[in-house]
Length: 109
Image 1 (cartoon, rainbow, N blue to C red):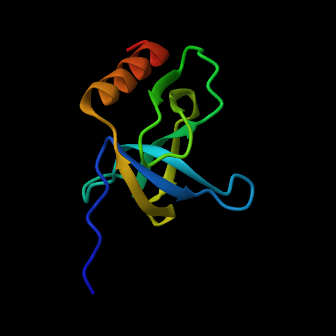
Image 2 (tube, rainbow, N blue to C red):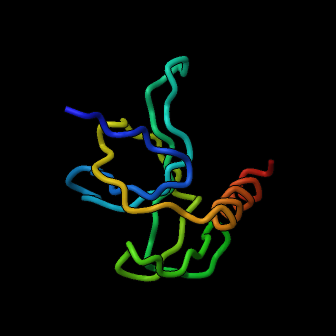
């Protein structure tokens, strides 16, 4: 059986967050490498409840999402890689750069 390729930073995946949050799209920010201390994927959730506040990066409505959405950089999470269910698409590099800038701003980096 062929193995799925590893997720890459900038890809949008559906994640199973369990009963409370159910399944949601997330932006992959970092995928664990063999020499990492923990085998955790760092993600930022997407939301269709766009409020225009600091910490949101509007990504419009990509063809693989049902509604206009934003990346919520304030909702950073680390998850087990087994929670990743399927890839939806990839953000354009310019939008990924906007997410990185929002993270730097939020964290004062």
